[in-house]
Image (cartoon, rainbow, N blue to C red; front, side):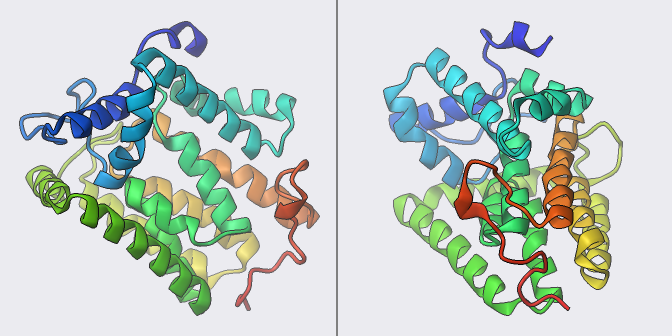
Length: 273
């Protein structure tokens, strides 16, 4: 069971180590690392820069427990605050695997659901973490939701600019790391090059934007999963974002039962036809 692995460091330890490297002035990326190198850091610099002050305060074990609590909180949020539904979501094998390896996918799932239902600019934050959620901005543009596009781009640009101001060298290292892996990189359970999956995700996004939102929004989540840079089993846990999106759209209620500020005044996205 996933809980049996919680005392041991998993993927979240890579984020803690990345923060430690920044604090020590060490290189953030390892050019010799492969897709299966333990605790290698592959993400854009902002995540490590955000984690750095936290890893300065928390030892590795405390950080791991805090990260586990964050994932469980995201799962509960996706279940709209209902513990039994959250437990039911764990029956979906990728969710159990995500809780085992403790990556960022349940956090991204919560971001996707919130971006679709309430705050579209979260697509930009998700894109800074793992690129593929940026398809949400493409979706917004194709739906003619230009104000949401502008806000999302502005938020993303602000985060990148702050990151660059803190240390532009990190972005040069990140770009070099991405170039080294290349568009033909195959990191997933299906041996399909990333460039092919990214193109497929874009095509699915275009289709999602051309159909009614009640179907297009869940399809957008599928597109993001398909276009994820790494598509191991735990990445499929992002699909649980479909559950609250469908439920809220059908009921016209709230995303999170105890947070009235998440209430939608209507079930049709701004700018949708």
